[in-house]
Amino acid sequence: MKGLYPLIALMASVFLFNASEFLPVALLGSIADDLRVTDFEAGLIVSFYAWAVALLSLPVMLLLRRMEYKRMLLLCILVFTACQALSGISDSYWMLMASRIGVALSHAVFWSIVTPIAVNVVSERHRKTAISCIAVGTCIAMVLGLPLGRAIGLMLSWRWSFLSISIASLLVLIILIMILPKVPNPGTFTVKRVPEIFRSRVLVGIFVVLVLIVTGIFTGYSYIDVFLTDFGGFSEGEVTFLLTVFGMAGVVGSFMFSKVSRPRMRMFTAAVFLINTVSMLLLNPSVALLMAACLVIFLWGFCYIAFSVSLQSVLLTESPEDATPITMSIYSGLFNVGIASGTLIGGGVMDSIGVGMIGYVGGAFSALSTAVLLLFLLPYIDKRMHQSPESGRS
Image 1 (tube, rainbow, N blue to C red):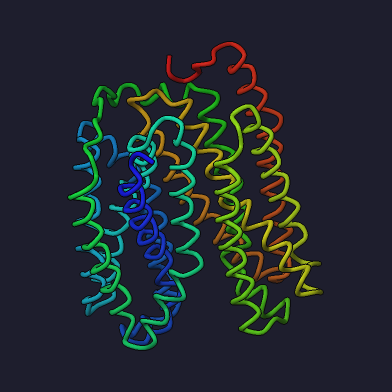
Image 2 (tube, one colour; image 1 turned 135 degrees about the horizontal axis):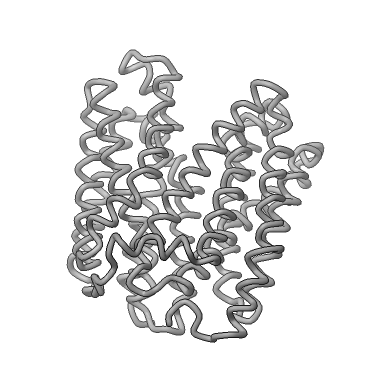
């Protein structure tokens, strides 16, 4: 397949960026003890990261909008590598916070361009495969990234978890320098054209649906460990198994997406949103049996990846070609708004009505996103497709 090796290198970079994003979650206790701060203050590192990505994605991409994509990606990974190293040698809370915001800056750029680059290094007929491969990098990070980072932190120190990512990302950077082809940037998009994006009913619909479903998912997922142990009564080994099932199901979701034909894509997307809603609403009763919980967790993990690649596929089709990184930057920013909002709402639910209710509250947001998708977004896309087969590129 054309572009196979660059695509594998991009998958490796996706793994590192995903593993890095939530690494502090697995190391909060060690970080708090070493830097002599409270667990709450250590937790703010995660929250500030999400909001930094949300706020920086669009402005930074507008600033870099004329830069050739390979150069932009390499610069992004260089900043990521340096800031991970800085995290590893941080001797104060504020130094660590500053380094994590630097990582968030690179994150904002990375997720704006990695998918557009991936679909450009392969042939036209392998575009969906490229999107799926990027998703697989995310899945592997969910399955292996956090446990591996935590293991390194426990064996050596939390600092070596960050330093290990820095070393690995430096190797990926060198490989990409050698094998990634140049990806031309039209450079014709201007700041004055930003309102055009928000005049597109399809793009705005994607953004609204995205915030709702990610908020719903992370209302539950942010506290899934506590839910499964405290409410479900599962052992540590069973929780590890269930979280592994969640991550592996995402690989299946990305594979299924790559096999779905374009005429069936809207049906696939609708099914994924519906299944996600049902899965979240069944979280509470499913913990009565390990096998029931396993099935529900599998379906939920399948949908977590499948919904995102489906929305990205529509976004790439509907965006003007020179605006793709800008629309992807908005997508990335709003995804992180959903993460931060879901984490906040889930925490409120846990403190007020109990962790057992996070599935119901998250499912309500997912149901709302499904309603918007079915009633407003997909019918309009159908109408557009009948009017113009080249929708979004004219």
